[in-house]
Amino acid sequence: MTASAAVQLASVRLITDDIPRLVRFYKALTGATPQYLTGDFVELVTPSATVAVSGFARVAFITTNTPRGGANNSAIVEFLVDDTNAVYERLATDFGDDLDVVQPPTMMPWGNLSALVRDPDGSLVNIYTPVTPEAWQLQRNRTPKPPHAGL
Image (cartoon, rainbow, N blue to C red; front, side, top):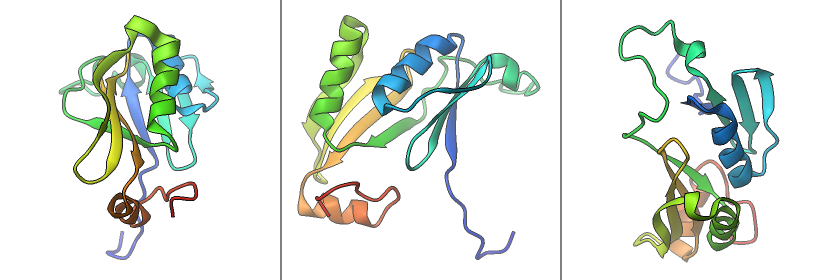
């Protein structure tokens, strides 16, 4: 690979002991239709990247520091959304008391409206919408690009 070769984030894969439960959460969050490539490997394709969900058997060949469902305590998966409040309310309605809310919709110092929840396996998930002109400028310099009129 040369220094000029493009590198793009294609997907984030989450390992779980309960594929249907985790797929249900990410389907509710993203609106993407789950694509079952096998009985234990599912992709939810969004406009900018894919959320993949698989069982332990797909990574059993990794014998040192083997990935385990529910063991993530070092990353936050972030989703740019049109309306943080609407997505948050949809999740709250769909999951009720089972939705693990870390932080309800809150204005961040850099201008994003952000809600932080945990998926059913405990992984942190940030749902955010740029609100201020500065936040919109930051997002325009990123991928994914803002999807609507806040440009």
